[in-house]
Image (cartoon, rainbow, N blue to C red; front, side):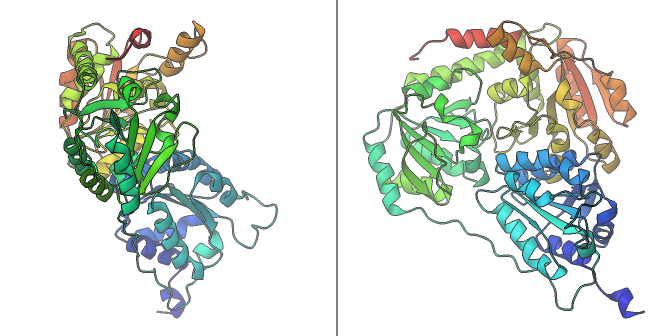
Amino acid sequence: MSAQATQRTAAQLIVQALEAEGVEYVFGIPGEENIHFVDALNDSSIRYVLVRHEQGAAFMAEIYGRLTGKAGVASATLGPGAINLQLGVADATTNSTPVVAITAQVGLDRIYKESHQVVDLVSLFRPITKWSELAPSPQALPELIRKAFKTAQTERPGAVYLAIPEDVESAPLPEGLAPLPLNVVRPQDPSPSQVARAAEILATARRPIVLAGHGATRAGASDALVRFSEKLGLPVATTFNGKGVFPDDHRHALGAVGFMRHDYVNFGFDEADVLITVGYELQEFDPVKINPARDKKIIHVHRFPAEVDDHYPVAVGVHGDIARSLHALGDAVRRRFTMNGTGEKIRRMLREELEQGREENGFPLSPRRVVSDVREAMGREDIVLADTGAVKMWMARMYPTYEPNTMLVSNGLSSMGFSVPGALAAKLAHPRRKVLAATGDGAFLMNSQELETAVRERIPFVVLVWEDGAYGLIEWKMDLELGRDSHVAFGNPDFVKYAESFGARGYRISSADELLPTLRKALADDVVSVIAVPVDYSANLGLTDKLGELTGPF
């Protein structure tokens, strides 16, 4: 065999570097300019998941990264393929999720001039990533790939982008090039002086409240948060992205903030004089809605300092490992707070609303009935992805969540269409759990082609399509603020036939009492299923009217 036949290429080095990083899946579509990379994956431990649109690949990488903490990898060709990745890449960055996006690029021999498919991809990705770069040579690949994963996974995590020119990808490797060893950034203890300052604020506080965000989930701080709440007697609310990091059936739970109007949980913040934010990031929820008068003292507990905002004036930042920070602060505070009646009333009102949903038997179904039946069908550790739109508002607000990362939304960028590809990745990350994508009919058709991917790859999950023939959240907003709506209605295919055309199973709900048994059957089957449920969104304005009439204090 000739030396040329046995010589390694840069594409093989890229694959070896991905294996060294612990990559299990690459989601993508091949192109002419990265065929050597895709071919090299065949001789590796990495499973290449061929998708039907690069946007789906990016959303899959994002949800895999969110659930595992390891950067999900999305791959595409140059030009249009790379550009199609951008929505999911931006979604990952704004949702603080580690993703490594790798695409082809034209060769170095023509990238400097006007030429077919030449687009400055590095510049295009730079505003939506933590880091964006082009590999100038095979020799640079070990350092660039190690930097990509370290940057993506280090707090605050996000997406990174690496362009591989086609002549670099196919180039022969010089001897001695190998992946770099991993160096993991270790969490740090908080500063004792900052913990002491935070304890001083709590020593004189009247009604402190905790707001837990997505960072607490990423840090694995759920148990520490529960102990902190119980030790000090503190009520805990979460953001939509933080749902489950504090169990909703705990006696101190207040539910989630993030609804577009003043919700039950907001009354807990109205009464508070001190906010203890735990792993909270401002993109999750606008602080003006919980600190409108800028009069609350804020203790910011996170791995990194808070972003600047007029309504988020941090009195003390406790920076370090979140669980260690909560332990230290809990030990430093020498008092226990007494829970007032507000928390119990908030919990009771949420319970009553869910119970009301169980009794609503109209058809089309009320959103409350759908949420109630989904909760009944899913286990505590099963995973629901609620797509952006009216579905997200009802699910994130009402769906009781008990474990971290079991109710997923996009609340950084609020992208439509992430739930179907995301459900595929969620099932790969947690194959023993049931996975359900709850999506509106508008969002479903944005990435429904990934049903074929799931069927072909034999990755079972359930899609629950809330069908109303309109962009329901925009209709809701128009009716609420303008008194009328326009340009939001559309037609739909027969979703049962549509699902079956991909080789999936399709169901259509024709009465309220059909939904729960259909959900149970579909979730128990080891196949891809689509359930179309007609939904009556007349409850939307009823909810916002009801919330608008609420007055406090509770």
